[in-house]
Image 1 (tube, rainbow, N blue to C red):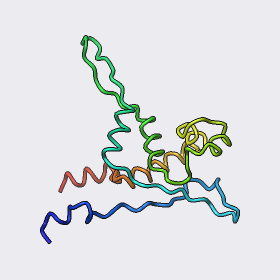
Image 2: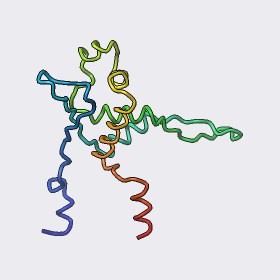
Image 3: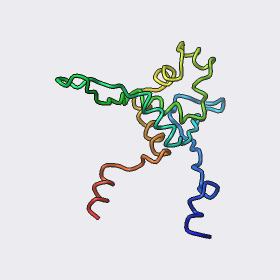
Image 4: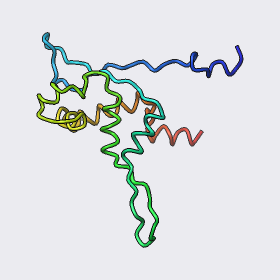
Length: 142
């Protein structure tokens, strides 16, 4: 096996989906907390999400100059939606039960702020954003 074979698409390990309890408020018939299933997305899919959530903002005092501005809240919500395998956030019946239209509105209405933050931590981790600033500082020291 050449050194490059390990990088071939057929030899790359696929990230496994992860099942997590997002909130103890969602229970099944047996009274157990329901698990949500999340999966990773590709860098290309992430680039598309970032582009959709980025606006060009004019630079004050510089006619015709613009700077990109990422709407972080919208990006994180759309990232969560893109990575959610279960429950189906696009399900009309589920959206109707919360009296909303759209996966983004559904997610915002389903979860409490702290639950959403914890969920985003899990979504970011499965996508490889699982390092803290402390990790980065420690790596820089070495």
